Length: 425
Image 1 (cartoon, rainbow, N blue to C red):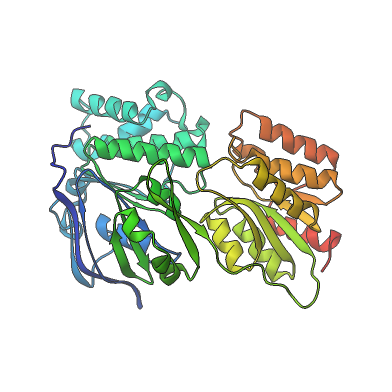
Image 2 (tube, one colour; image 1 turned 90 degrees about the vertical axis):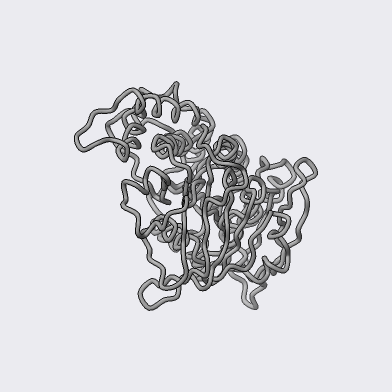
């Protein structure tokens, strides 16, 4: 995909940007430049201003001071149809159309190029085919969108954005709720698109994912830009401590030369009074509510296996939970699975969140199954089997566990009610 820009052109420029959301200062004095044909990851803790920054670039949030230029245009002062021919936006929770095919959904991306009530012409049809080809969706073009897997649906939505033939692509958490395999698949796609000429700005929750695939990282905290630069410049222990309040060790992946983080934050807090402990099987943010509500109800919690700097990892450490970690973007190893199994077997109960299960984290289900065999009560949130990316192995494991006596509940509230009855604090 050739967008006719040079590798050193500045496609996104932000100077002294201040944004307010009501009476709250969401961004304060942010300045950065993003060159063409690069992937810039906007990172930082929850509430740092990542989404606000993307909305300012998209023109949906105005600046109280400072300036924003995308492709040489002020997005807030550019007519939407004209801006859409330069920039495509994929929000955090895009609407996946129901009842139409992938090709029909992707063709919606041509709307900015059509005259009112105009029919697509040869150029539009070529743009749709090219977008499908670039995202690997050409073979699925005639499949209904609502029959796609999570990773396929993300690629279809990116294809719809590409059909606009933009020069700049903005994405808010494009890997949220995907398993490891699909996260990597999406980031590899973004790298290929940047190599083909696009400038990509993505808000990313996972620092290690951003470090592995981004050319630039912009680290925000409390609405301020702490630093911007290459992953080696930004992924530093002092900056992580400043932004997240967490101690971390920076290591270098010997295969890529890029840094990654291993958190060495506070260990599990030991309470004076014994408490019942719930081991939570989660990942990718699916276990956060379970852990938080368990602690609020008076239980101790542990979790694992989670990948370092996964959002569940962050929540667990905030709750002073014991965590079994795995290296970023790696399948769960037998050693870490055994450590998690020890935690699960010694817990008073195990709760399996509605986590997507792929080949890389199937061992987490096996951890829960081993605890059940050892006599530990196991509660499974309904939805795990519906997010099975193992070809049916995860669904079969859930069925076997329920047949063995595990409870299947509809939501977190149901899990808490069952915990209170079976393992009261």
